[in-house]
Image (cartoon, rainbow, N blue to C red; front, side, top):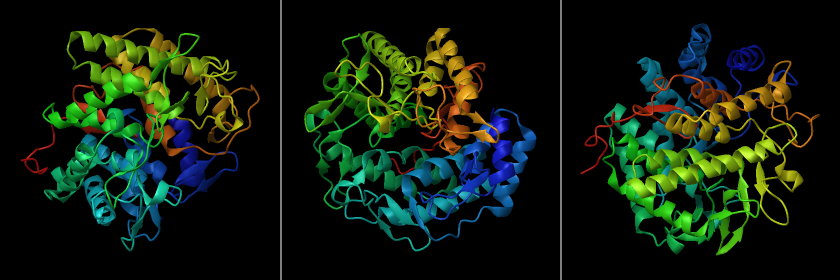
Length: 450
């Protein structure tokens, strides 16, 4: 599947950001500010660990000869960090080849102006040429988004480690400072924060989009520091406790899910993006005292099972973008706008973690169901495409092979069926785009920790 996805991208869209497999051309989009080759950078480490050596060389050659960082355009700080910087760092650590390191550092420098705000909380959009930055037009009152400014920590520590320049680590430590100081309603972290005042802009809380990877990076920061970053662990433990208390619910049919919270009112829906949380909670549980460990492992298994149900209850056996638990709805999408599947990885990501941490065969069975469904409904003549409705066996395709399909979905599926020592969880943490970063590689002094 990886070779098929890559070969078609290479044939029809090399150098563009993503392949449009139905029309057999490339897509550039506006998320990456003029940067190109998102699929190349996202695919590098997957090609490498799958030992697709020829394909890896093709990708590496593109980076050496054609990857241009002198671009002008508005980029998502978050997307450039997780896909480009994450992908380049991981490939450098896997191969030791300098080109990946130097490109990561050069790109990292271009992101720094986004942090020039009164609080040091970065704005979400940056022009990679001019260094001008601003907030997303749709974000509440010029605010920054928790999952965006909260998902820089892992990569920026490595940028300081590799460059010897503490500035990257200082930027993310400051974000941590602002977040530990600000008052949390009921212990929860709302999704929108003002980069000017450093206070919350509205009280919307979600473990899905807008919030998701902030929580993931707390537990992973602690793991990546070889369990020395105790502040991250405490923030994670406290946040998870508040989530358990206020957001974890059980449906009438007995399915455990994590609701969203809007100023104290619960919205009983769960997004596909929130399905990563089973894997995260299981990963965090490994390092908890006995009773809490067992409770968290049970919670992780229940959430993962609910996410599996969202797949099992669809006609294609692929899950919808969001699913609800109200008015007789159980883990199904009730709105047309939530019925699509865009090759997302979060559910198989949780299967991979739960397989590695419990070795219960059902997680491999569930993963294989996804492989078969992808082959049946998403594979087209020239690549893989998302589908617009998971509740029909004749879905229309969305004509987009997302770069994260190669970075994450196929990597996590591959790791689910590998031996545990391939990218062992003892030695690596995955950034939120599934790019592996080494544990305990960070010299904490260089990274600006007292």
